[in-house]
Length: 171
View 1: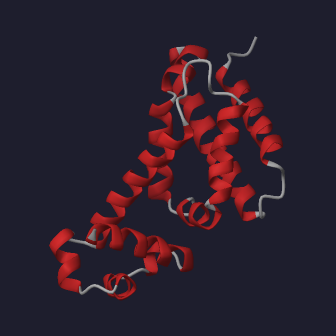
View 2: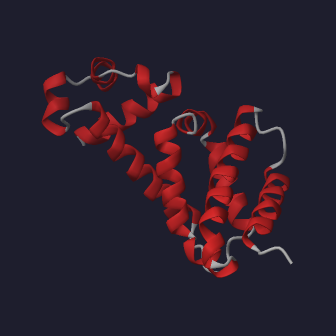
C-alpha cells in the first residue's frame, strides 16, 4: 500500500514536471508520508523510478494484447497509439527521457522480435529493429507533441507502411 502511494504520487508529479526535478522531499509531501518511510522501501529515487518504469512497461504491453508473427499490423500500432493518447502527458514526459526510450525500445523489441527476424535477413534485422522501434517512437512523440493532430488510425497506417518497408528486403 505504501509503495502504491509512492507510485501514484510520482506519476502525479511527473504530470507536472520532468522527472529530473522530482525530489524525495516533494514525493513524500505528495504522498503524505515521511522520508524515512521512503528509505524503508527504496535506497534512492532512481530505484523507485526503475521499478515504476519496468512495472509500467509490463502493464502497458499486457494491455496491448498479444503480438504474434502475423499481428504487427496497423491494429497493434493503433492500440499502442490509442494508449499513448490516453496517457498523453505521461508519455510526452517519458519519451523525453533517453533512458526510458531505450528501455521501452528494448521491451518492444523483445515483444515482437520474432516478427522482424522472420521478415528481414539476419544481417539486416538489427538495423530494421532500430529503425522501426526508434523511428516509430520518434513519430509517436512528434504526434503527441503536436496535440495528436492526425487521427490515430491514419498515423497507425503510416507507421505500419514505413515499418513494413524497413522489414522487407529491397527487391
